[in-house]
Image (cartoon, rainbow, N blue to C red):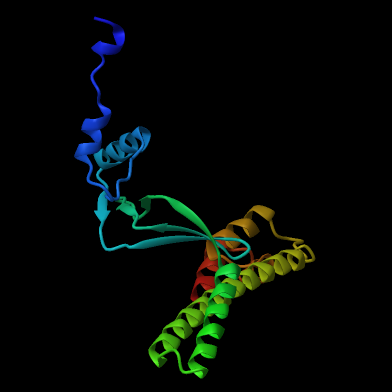
Amino acid sequence: MSATEAKPEATPAAEQQIPAGANVSIIPKHQKQAKERLLKLGLKQVKSISRVTFKKKGNFILAIENPEVYKTQGGSYVVFGEAKVEDLNKRYAETLAAQKAAQKAADDGKETTEDISTSGSVADAITEDLKKASLEDKKEDDKEEEEVADADVDTTGLEEADIKVVMDQANVSKAKAVSALRKEKGDVVNTIMSLADI
């Protein structure tokens, strides 16, 4: 008996077990092990989530379709799934092109009004996403401007550590923290409490 005759043929048996056209996803061994370890920590699976998106700077989105989401006891989430990069600008341009084509076809009488309203709602949703993204970028720019203005603040008579504590706890700019500390005569606790009331 030769070495080639001793090997059983596993290929035809494996093909017979999986029906043709079936959608099979192979989970890597390290991902299985990670899930098992996380489940031992007492994570609870959240089943009603169909899509998870993470926004990156520059209108890029990491999207995970049909993810496995687990919630920790502390309120954080652990997400498993295949992340795909989406460009909102490209998606918006494609939707606008589809909308224009739909309107042109509607003018020619080839398309129903339902199809036009559907493509319009998709365009509106993408437009809304872009507006939100630009507002967040604007907020980041405002924070940078505040940081530049904070460099000019007169901190004489106040300790830098106290200013940083007030800034961190009350989530305010350096200028607001300094003026509030001066109002409260250097009392950090009262300063934080007064800024929390605002």
